[in-house]
Image 1: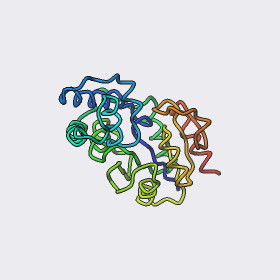
Image 2: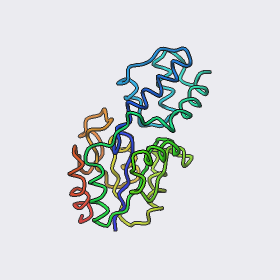
Image 3: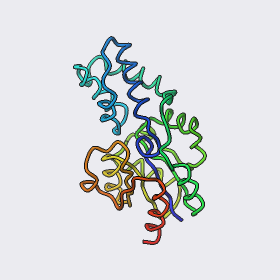
Length: 218
């Protein structure tokens, strides 16, 4: 049987608006001006620490200066309920149901911290689909190190593993793990798809079960 492991932000859910609003709320609490949401969107993918560092740099501050710790702490405090604007991408729930009917088991491997990961999955009613969930702080390593992906796969206990993500970090993680990778092209990626490691791209979740079935036969 096959395990299908998903990234979360930019893959199953569009959470960029909430992440940007959360970051800007903390900036304003610290007496700094808000940044354009699209600029903050470009910082998503490598974990909260990287996001905070990039936000501070964009605000004219040192990435690891005296504001890093208070901003990180406050951001994480707000992050567990930051899903006012977060939505599931179209077709995700049907695709997950079809994958379950195909006999697949599913997991999450994200750089989002584990507490907000569980919180948003519960809030959106997606938690029932995933037998293993790893966040960016579940292990000492985070993506693109393959360790979290291997840990998720180990918990799912399947010989065949397929990873599904949207970003450069996800592509690098899959390549480091030497696992098949399906890339959702409507997420937060900035690099052209053809320049990234992948087995197949898709822009509609209606395509996903068929792509997984093709890799299962391969």
